Length: 79
Image (cartoon, rainbow, N blue to C red; front, side):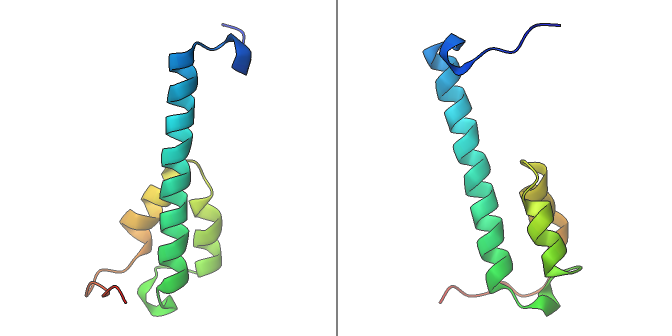
């Protein structure tokens, strides 16, 4: 098994990839938390507190929330 590399040992391309993936993860989580905060509890499957914790799980959490956490129905209008 290969030893872990430190940040300084990564090439500029690898550093850029890590930063890009991190930004995508943060963007997904922020969008999911914002949607969860603005959506009424009646439009959520399960408890909101549970989804807050699930969303914190890298990539899987926000995607799971968007896929299974919201009940199907009318699209909410942006106000």
